[in-house]
Image 1 (tube, one colour):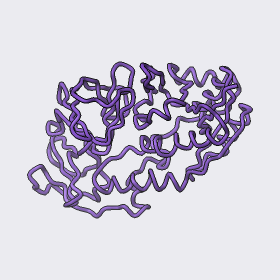
Image 2 (cartoon, rainbow, N blue to C red):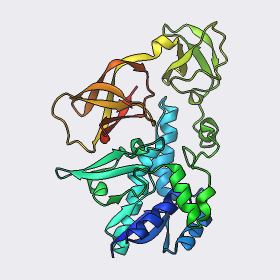
Image 3 (cartoon, rainbow, N blue to C red):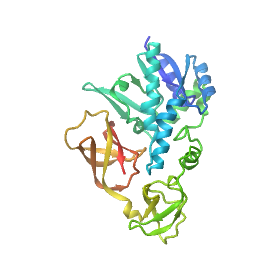
Image 4 (cartoon, helix red, strand yellow):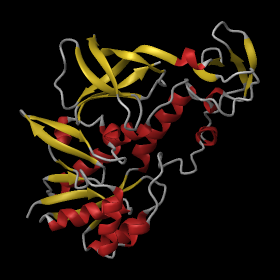
Length: 337
């Protein structure tokens, strides 16, 4: 029987993934990732109801060192990082591989809404149909991980997953969906950064020429594109267009000034596409979601230059540009502010 280690969170997606894998003849072991934020009881309950072995993997220190602290430091430097991409690559999938090796399992699996296949000797990440696609968050995974990976939920939607769980008597059938950033469950990034000692002092709101428009309460409280909560009366809609950590200033602009025609990116992870030697075209996502932007991508040194067919809303530095050709995720790269 084929053995697989499944990331078991205690939620409905991972529980149904285990159920589907068992129906396909896999011997499933559930691995719960202990990040020091709770959730063990739910994961153990799911394993008990599914009748599968349960392993707890202590990743709290590793997650703090490799994800939370870099997240906080990046925010303090004026970036808006995506910790989920980093966690998937450095913590979550690394733990699955390590656990699989330890028990002699050939495969690993998670409840992500995405797919994986192999074309001409290269493994590809595939965008899943429907609103729940999570391929963007997997753009940091590499070939050795993809070669062992199974996504049981590929092509399914959430209502189907909840129905399967309810029919199987799994208590997670009615569980709430997980939050965007698991270690900030209330969504208050600023308060989290302040608790870690990364709070920045108050400073000036300025325009592109440096004229003072008002006072901000700490640059860590703002992100590029933000409009609400600025507290500046300008007689028109204004947005955060840039964070200037070197001067502790937050630049505000009209919406027209937030459009860009090109961006640069670094730390490229080539996924479904082998490293490109010359320009090529693709559709690019600038954030998690369905919207893509047609663009010409040109390798430049260790990075990329991405020129869009039409201007796009200026993205936040530290987020990821993720390119697709049809359903195949070509690469993920960190955007340079």
